[in-house]
Amino acid sequence: MTLPTSIDDVQTLLSRQDYVCGRPLATVAFLALTLGRPLFLEGEAGTGKTEIAKALAAALGRRLIRLQCYEGLDAASAVYEWNFAAQMVALRRAEATGEAPPVLFSDDFLIARPLLEAMRPQPGGAPVLLIDEIDRTDAPFEAFLLEALSDFQITIPETGPVTAPEPPIVILTSNRTREVHDALKRRCLYHWVDYPSHDREMEILAARAPEASERLSREVVAFVQALRTEDLFKKPGVAETIDWAKCLLALDMIDLSPEVIADTLGALLKYQDDIQKLQGSEAKRILDEVRAELA
Ligand SMILES: Nc1ncnc2c1ncn2[C@@H]1O[C@H](COP(=O)(O)OP(=O)(O)OP(=O)(O)O)[C@@H](O)[C@H]1O
Ligand SMILES: [Mg+2]
Image (cartoon, rainbow, N blue to C red; front, side, top):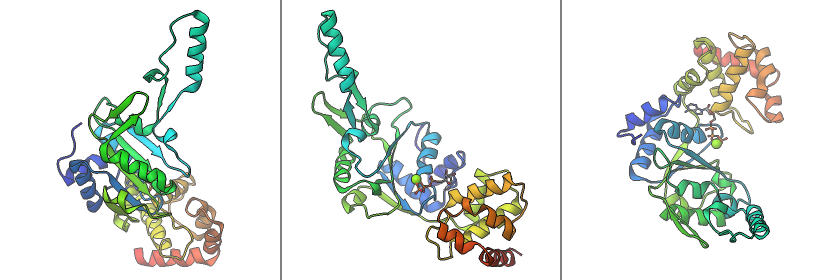
C-alpha cells in the first residue's frame, strides 16, 4: 500500500486499526513517512507508543519487525549471528559422506536478527521497524544504532554489505528512564506522547472496549483522569483504562461504586503503596468529585 498523502489520511488509516491518533501525533507521523525520517516517541507508560507502530504496519500492509531493547542487548542479538551448530553439523556430514565441504559463511548459516531483517526486501514494501524501549539499552548500542539508521546498510565482514532497497519505516520508543543521546534524537522527528484528554480517552475506549456502555465509559474515563492528578508512584496509562473497563464489564457492573473500585484496583494500579492510598475513603472522595463533575 502506498503512503498516506495527508495528515487526515494518517488519522483515517489508523482509526481503521482502532488506533485513535490526535492531530499533533498524526502530523509528525505523516512527516516521518513523507520525509523518510525515523519517528522517536517518548512518553508515559501505556500511552500507545508501541501500538502506533503495530497499527501503522497493519494499515500500510507492511511487515512489522520489532527490536525489543534491553540492558546488554548486543549486535549479535540485534543484527545477525552465525549458526555455529548448523555449521558444525554440515561440516561433519560432509566429512562423513566425502562430499565437498559446505560454504560456512553463507546465507544458509546466517541467522538474521531484526535489524538485518529490516534491511532485506519484503513483499509489500519496506517494513515498519519498531525499536522498542531504546532507553533500556546502553550508550555503545545507541551509537551502533545511529550508524545503522544513518545509511540503512549493514556490513557482514564474511559476506559483504546488505543495503536496504528502500529504507524501513523506523519508529523508536522510550519511557525516558534515561535520556537518549542527542545525536540519535537529532536524526529523528520527535513527539512526546502524553496521557490523552478526556474526550480522546473516551474515543479510545469506544474503539478498544466497544461493549462498555456510554455511562460506564464516562465514569471510568473521568475516574482515571482524576486519578492521574493524584500523587501516585505510577499513574495508570490508557492500557489500564481499557483493562479496567473490561474487568468491570466481566463483573457485570453498569456503574462505579467505592466497593467495586476497591475490588478492582489491581487493574489500574500496580504498586501496593498506590493501592493502599486509594483504599478506604480516598476512592469514595474521588468518585464523588467525578460524579459531581459529570452531573
Ligand atoms: N491512541 C490509542 N488508540 C487505541 N488504543 C490505544 C491508544 N493508546 C493506547 N492504546 C491501548 O493501550 C495499550 C497500550 O499501549 P502501548 O503498549 O502502545 O503503550 P506504550 O506507550 O508502548 O507503553 P509502554 O511505555 O509501557 O511500553 C494498547 O494495546 C492499546 O490497546
Ligand atoms: Mg511500549
